Length: 209
Image (cartoon, rainbow, N blue to C red):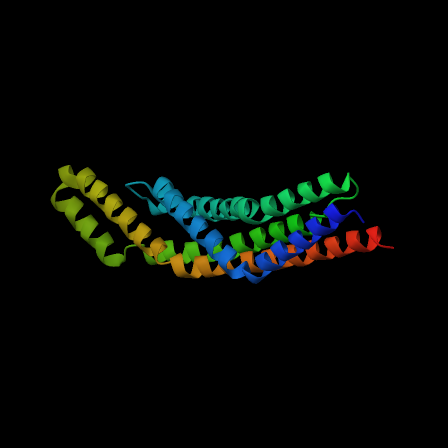
C-alpha cells in the first residue's frame, strides 16, 4: 500500500471513529434544525386563521414536511460528510469500488417513513386538543340568534383564536418530536460510521494481501 493511502486511511478511521463517538451530538444538531424549520412550516400552514374542517389535510402536510426536513438534515450532517471522505479516499486510491452508501440511504428512508407515521399521530392529537368544546358552539348559536349582523365578525375572531390554540398545542410537541428525531439520527450516524469503518478495513486488507 502506498504510504500516502495508508496515512489517509488512518486519518479517516480516526475521523469516522470520532463521528461515531459524537453521534448523539450530531443527532442533537439534526433535531434542533428539524424543529426550527418545522416551526416555520407550522406558522406557514396554520396561518393567522384556522378551520378545523381542514385539520386532516394539515396533519398530512405537517407530517410529510417533518419527514422531508429530517431527510434533508441527515443529508447535510451525515451523508455529505461521508461522501466527502469517500471522494478523498478514491482520489488517493485511484478509483476502485466506492463506499456502499445503499445501507445509509435505506436506513434513512426507513427512519423517515417511521418518523412521519409516529409524528402524524401526535400532530393529529395536538390539533384535536385545540378543538373548542360544546360551550363555544352554543355561544355561537346564541350570539348569531341575538345579533345576526355580527356573525361574520365572531367567525373571524373564532378562527383567529383557533389558529392560536392549534399553534400552542403543536408547540408542545417540541420535546417528543426532537427526542424522536434525535434517536433516529443517532442510529443512522452509528450505522453509517460502522459501515464506513468496515469499508476502510476492506481496502486495507485488499492493499495488503
